[in-house]
Amino acid sequence: MEAATASSGFGSGQGLARSSPRPSGGRGRYLIRLLLRHPLRPVSRLVVAAANPQQQVGVEGGQAICAATNMEPERGSPREVMDEIARCYELVSRLGRGAVYLGSSRVPATHPHYHQTAELAREIAKLLDCTTWTGAGPGLMDAANQGALEADKPVGGFKIGKEAGEWTTSNFHPYLPSESYHTCRFFSARKHGLVDAVVRNDATVKTAIVALPGGIGTLDEVFEIMALIQLERIGSTLPVPFLLMNYDFYYSKLLEFLDDCKDWGTVAPGEVASLWKVCNGNYDALEYLAQFYNVPAGERNYDISPLSKEHRSPPYTIPR
Image (cartoon, one colour):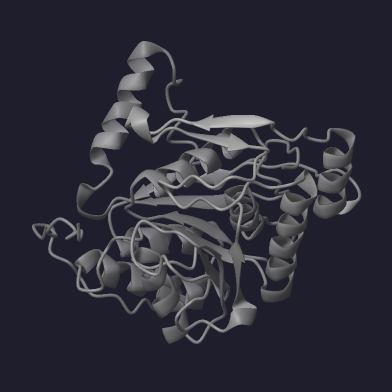
């Protein structure tokens, strides 16, 4: 990732990805120089620890497969990762930067959060006139794709072969054209692509990070991006809005935990609030983005359905 300097933010500074000048030579060339300067040595033996000790598998030369999880062979050289990251950057360059959606792959299409996400993605795509980016998986990632397609705006994605839901046996997306997504072998390449899709080095480019309800994978991406923002390594010369969608107070206990961290001294007062904007509904999110990008009031024609404050969605039904 590229180095960055703090930039003054919109309003109180909530939800802004801080940034600064990047190194000369561009992201791809900088990464190539870094990898060539510090090559990684192949691992001669790696022991994969499973929850059940009887399932521990020794991996010789990084090429054996963990039978319990059907893992793909380990990379043979860092150049394989570098090449995949370069392909992710090329896809972003071709389709254009925009709004990146992070969310659960397990949410069924019948759940209210799926419909709220599709609605939000449709309206953001129209409001910002941008490309919609996801992990190209099922669940809320699919909802965001559907919303953007309904708005007749571009869609791009970085898929992986395995998700915590369906579509796990194929490297191909069921309906997106192959030129609009890349199936990543390495998680690191996927993350590089998603972060690059929100970089702003031109004031005419409108991007956003939208964190939807999700589990381990979503939280991994959310906190990694938070760390990039906090450490000013997001790689953008202009601030990027970061929205946490707290549908049905999904993230309220997480927010309480982060609040408790202040009492322990591991988080500074106001630190978390400066990194993102918490939104309880789609209207809050759209208004924040409209103000952030100075969209005139006459152009804020949101086509969203009002939800009762008393409404609470049921838990997700996860097939086992």
